Amino acid sequence: MQDIRCGNCHKKLGMGEYTRLSIKCPRCGTLNDMRAASPAPERPGAPSESINAEHSNCLLDGRQAPPR
Ligand SMILES: [Zn+2]
Image (cartoon, rainbow, N blue to C red; front, side, top):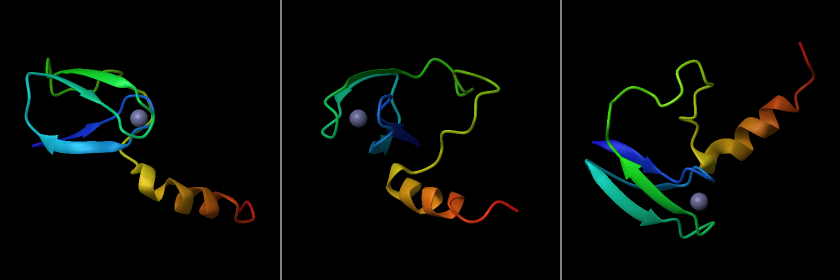
């Protein structure tokens, strides 16, 4: 299975396997058209987007620590 996330706000919408899926995000209202074309990331080299939106606030707090 794989995470199904909103392409706009990265909210986790669910988990599962799909070949094609259309799901509307309850948070931001974006209609996500999902296609499982390939298991590879869509944008190789892009920063990891596996951060849970629910935890982003914690990470932001951590970044407010004094630099080095
Ligand atoms: Zn969303």
